[in-house]
Image (cartoon, rainbow, N blue to C red; front, side):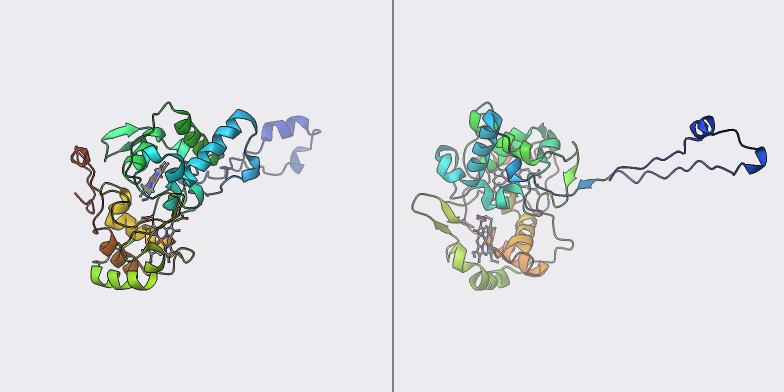
Length: 287
Ligand code: HEC
Ligand code: HEC
């Protein structure tokens, strides 16, 4: 909504009106409506896919969408996990509380305490390649990196620069209760095992395409990924799992599930010693 600043154009009105007898003049008051406080979050409205441009820019945006949806298949040399970007950023980054990318082009560069640096959106994408995908970074000047950024920029159109959308990231649960991993294990057997497997290994299709992504083990995200943190995993589960029934679990159940599955064996991260080197380490960091 735009702030309304209405001031009655008194001088103009008088100049155009025919002369009036003084007795007929009514008191005229200038009205000033208070500007509402500037918004801090913007509604999440992904653009209509039909509005993707044609031509070379449209081709790059479309390539970017293919890459984030089929990352393991398209970029096997950069991806160690049986995972696509959309395994966590649901529906190609268009869903609130599921790591949406709508508006993301206007909030980077941003300071991140984990890196102790102001980082670009390309750096942030590469963080997920190295941690969440347990892989290696894309060259920042490659056509594929440009395509991913073109897709995210297209998703971000209409969101004012500097504003985050509502439901950015995986909004943390209000009052994290002390988690109970044994209860989490029981819930896992009841509600998650059918898709993610008894060993957390998930299901990978014959073409290497992840069908149900792994929650732990060699083909999952590594120990330095955001999803390896208790609060982030609990929030993701609370809002998004079981698939298609997001919001059905209680805060406590989501905490218990996260406490069970995040501490299962998963790949290490060689450069973890460099993280939060100047402070800002969150309480639920794994190392
Ligand atoms: C295992 C889950 C997972 C996978 C897979 C994953 N990410 Fe992420 N991503 C996260 C988490 C967790 C965050 C941090 C969100 C937060 O800060 O609350 C994140 C953050 C981001 C951000 C910044 C979002 C923001 O609001 O600041 C971008 C951009 C991003 N990821 C891109 C990617 C791309 C591109 C891929 C694929 C190459 C990918 N991610 C794969 C979990 C994942
Ligand atoms: C019906 C199948 C299904 C069930 C049941 C299910 N998931 Fe998932 N889960 C998925 C799919 C599919 C994805 C990837 C999202 C996508 O591709 O759209 C996913 C993604 C995830 C992820 C992020 C990616 C990763 O591998 O780490 C986590 C964490 C997760 N699920 C946890 C759970 C938990 C905990 C439960 C039980 C409460 C659960 N899921 C139940 C299908 C399921």
